[in-house]
Image 1: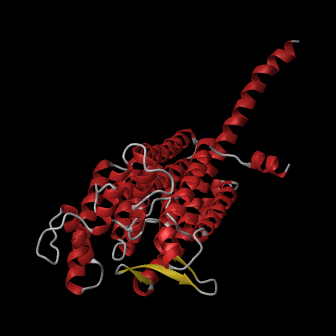
Image 2 (image 1 turned 30 degrees about the vertical axis):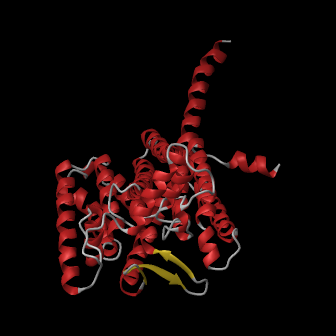
Image 3 (image 1 turned 180 degrees about the vertical axis):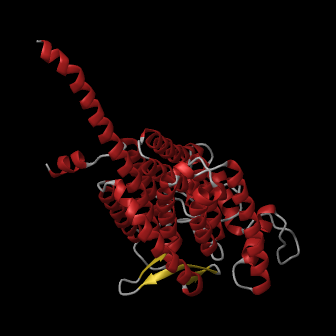
Length: 401
C-alpha cells in the first residue's frame, strides 16, 4: 500500500528514472568487485564497502525523489544564495582545503566530519545561477554589455577559483557553459571570444604556477607528456603511459567483447583507484565492450531525454536548467570514459552515479532531481492543456444536445 502511494507520487520522466536505477545497480556491482583488495588492505569485511556504497546510493535516490517534488521555479531564488555560498567555499578550499595529489579540492565539515569537493557544489550552483540569468536576459542576450557580461562574469569567477587546484573541472565547466551559451542564443563571436580568453587564461595560469610554485603546473605538464608518450622513466627510456593508464588498457583488453564475468576482474588488484577514476575499465573488463557500450548508451539516453524536456518546457529558466545540468553530467561521464580508454590525458574526474563516493553522488542526485522537477512540471502542464482542449471540444456538443 505504501509502495503504491510512493509510486503514484513519483513523477517526472520515467526513462530518466530508469537510467538512474540501472546506473545505480551497475555501480553496486562494479564497486563490490573493485573494492575487494581495498577491503583486504584495510582489514575490512569484503562487503563493507558494498554496504557503505549501498547506503550512499539509497540516500541519493531519496534526495532525487525529494528534490523532484519541489517546484523547479523555486530554484531560481535558491540559485542566488547557492552561488554566493559557493564562492567563499571555493576560496577557502583553494588556500586551506585538504590536499590530494598536490591539489586542494576538499574541505571537512566540523562536527559531522564529512568531506566534500566544493567544486561539486560550485558546478550545481553555477548552472542554476546561469540558467536564471540567461532566462532573464533573453531579450538582450545578444548585447555584449547588457546581456552577455552578466552571464559571463559568474562563469569566469567560478572557473578561475577552481582552476588552480582542479583544472580539468574548470575546463569542463567552461566548455559546457559555452554549449549552454550557444543554446541560450548568445552570439557565436562572443562565445569564440570567451574560448580564446579561456585558452589565454589557462596558458597564463600555467606559467604563473610554474614561476611561483603555487598550483599544479608540474602535474599538468607531466600528464600531457605521459599522454603524448614522451616522458622518460628512471632508466632514461621513454615510457608509453602512466602506470594507471597502462593497467586500464590491460583491463579493457582482457574484457574483449563479452567480458570475463561479474567479479572476475584481474586488474582491480593493480589499478590504484579501480573504484573511482578508473571504474569504467573494470566495467569493461568484467562485462566486455558490450557492457561498456551499454553504459555509454545509458548516459546518452539521459541526455536525449533531457533535451526533450528542454524542447517541451514553456519557460526559459526550466529549459536551461534541465539541459545545462544534464550536459555537464554527461560530459563528465564521457571525459571519464575517454581517460579510461586513453583518448585524453588523466583528469581525476569520477564517473557520475557509478564511481564510489559520497558527496559527489549526492550533488549529482540533486542535479538529477532538479531535471526531474522540470520534467514533472512539463508533464503536468501538458496534462492540464490536454484536459482543457478536451473540455472545449465537448462543451459545444453538450450545449446542442
